[in-house]
Amino acid sequence: MQYAHITGWGKCVPPAKLTNDDLATFMETSDEWIKSRTGISERHISHVNTSEMASVAAAHALAAAGIDGCELDLIILASASPDTLIPNIASTVQANVGATCGAFDINAACSGFLYGLGLASSLIKSGQNKKILVIGAERLSFYLDWSRRDTAVLFGDAAGAVVLEASEQPGGVLGYELNNDPEGRDILKSQFGSQMDRFDASSLDFFIQFNGQEIFKRAINGMGSLSAKVLDKCQLDKDDVDFVIPHQANERIIDTLVSRMKIPKEKAFVNIANYGNTSAATIPIAICDALEQGLIKPQQKILSCAFGAGLTSAAAVFQW
Ligand code: ACO
Image (tube, rainbow, N blue to C red):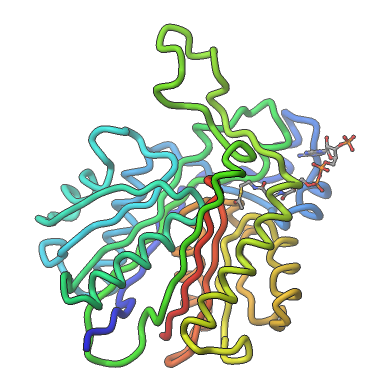
């Protein structure tokens, strides 16, 4: 029997910080409004492409796992803001880390990392692969209309990565659940793509737009129901969960989610203050930060859940 364990992790956070006070110098907003509504204090803005951040995070994850890129069997890169559609940017990471394996991108928006982690765990447990790199990377600043305070204050750029390896030691990714609700596709979108008039880029709205209150409600319901489903699948009770690593979209979403699930707030990891919403990158970055802070201990059972455009949702349980 093969198990799929996280053996390496790494992140890339661009050095340039944009604080709430910085935003207030060019749009009608305030540190008080942003912090009280979202929990965000600052976000990082990248001067390099998504694939470059992804490659740095990947190199750190490989170093932490103690393996070379050439040992990888597969690279899965989750992003809703790749630098190019063709070729996929997993191939850029592949070239940068010296891997000779399959490599592809997935777009499941903010749930993308957990989609990738789940798929990678299945490939390892089935015996198909032994070492897989899973990355979440975003440069959402490129897709923001910086004159719109309702969207621009929420997002940030960054990348995170993990290495998943086969082991006979029980544990690792115990289970996962994926879902999508196409009825809500229009609630959160950027219309960038082939539906745009190629001779008039302003014909459709290129920038990210969403109905915040609708997303707020659906995110809590979506992450809550998939979390319950994955715990059930793993035959675990909410009290068996030692630690929760939720997608970081809004601190109030996280608070309401754990309170509804009757999980103590102290068990939920929150680092949105420093990064804003980095979409597919929030969860691998949170794994890195929680480990750095000594909050994840051996044998702990960790519940992770996410929600995003699509409307996608995902939840996974892994044992450290
Ligand atoms: N600064 C100051 N005022 C603002 C700002 C801002 N940055 N943005 C909006 N406002 C104003 C609005 O214009 C409105 O003013 P009005 O009452 O005069 O009309 C007022 O603040 C309240 O606006 P609401 O939209 O009702 O504020 P709300 O409390 O719903 O918070 C927010 C908005 C933070 C976007 C919240 O709905 C939210 O977090 N939603 C979910 C997150 C989300 O949509 N993320 C997108 C990615 S999806 C994902 O990752 C899960």
